[in-house]
Length: 350
Length: 183
Ligand SMILES: [Zn+2]
Ligand SMILES: [Zn+2]
Image 1 (tube, each protein chain N blue to C red):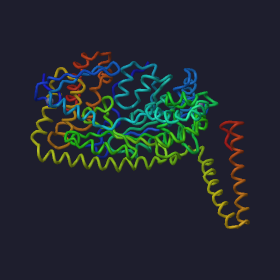
Image 2 (spheres, chains in turn purple, cyan):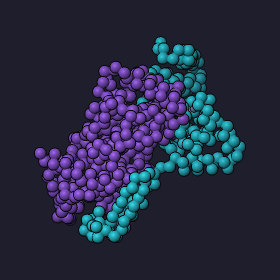
Image 3 (cartoon, rainbow over the protein chains, first blue to last red):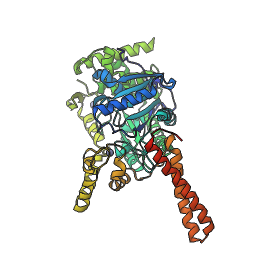
Image 4 (cartoon, rainbow over the protein chains, first blue to last red):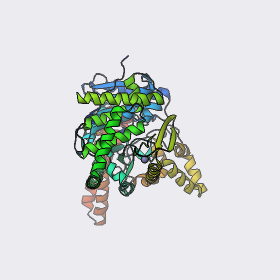
């Protein structure tokens, strides 16, 4: 049986526009098959039928020859967790799906989840601010799949989804933002609080509920009905554009006032990342953020975005266990974490 | 131990969290702990579907007749009832939407602000959706012509409406008889 290996996803390569602030852009479309019960109410047998139907439509197709197939049932807990941490599948697919499976393009920019909350979740995730490009990628596979499948669609309500919050376009577009300056100066709430009034929502990328870890914030659309895909995406672009501008202003103000402190913080972060022997993931997230800010302000040149993105992912519990090749408990992970961080830093120096 | 946040002061506040069996630990100085607390709770609360359902149900429960009607709504295809739907917050199949439409439409409007799809249409449904959109327009035009007493033009429009309706209903019958057949 093939095994999942730790690999870098396309979004981690550090390319794309606005990478100083926008780490990645993701678009996903929710689709269901007409004539089949949606996964949450379907029996094991029905979800099995859907899986078979989807698999038989892509079998042998050239357009899908670059995809790897991973049934959730054949992956270990930490392998699934690693896929969640790389934003390639949802926690729901990993933990709660019946006959759930993943189709993953080799560059890991496109993934298709089968039997998630909806029969199909097609997503594309790219580095930097590339929502439009991510939607184009998503639509290619949306159209290919629709060639042989009949989607559940209503003339007035659009694509029908299990949850009413996705009905219409079934589209969720989101960006992962690094906003250390807006967060440290507490300006963040002023901007993000207003988002819900224009159909957008913001939350910490990691951590539960309202917590922000590593200064990473995800902004996404909440409204899927009544707006076209293009409107949803251009709405996001204009808001993100303003957030970027505010973050840049806040960074410049910090740099003017606290240049030495910021440089000190970044260099200390690098020192700890290189030499610590025990490290929690929260501490690592904060250090990576400090280092990233130092890099983006031109205060430290020893790293790049690709390395920083790799670090961001490999310090997560699932990826650490994937790299170690075995299950690790919390305290074992805190020892393994700095080992893997050091290896990544050394690889980069070579 | 030094504070994880500022790494300058002594960490004398230890926060242990247990979320779904994942334990995480935070060691902070007093200053950073207070800062973190402020930041954590100042965000807009996440949109809660359950709260929305609860508030809508409470409203309709005040009118018991309406509540009973809502209870009776059931999807003919997957057998999900509206009250089950309002508990789990998930639809069971594509037939649920027309079955619950009366209650569902105001719910969609509350979630999304709108209740009419304005985005992409599946390639296969495009022809049909275009005809339907054309039909709406033709019917509007017809009203105007009749009001203006342009009966000849109205008769022409009526023919076009009939043709369009025929095309749609024949398609439906065909689909029923033989799914996937394209003609
Ligand atoms: Zn502190
Ligand atoms: Zn149903």
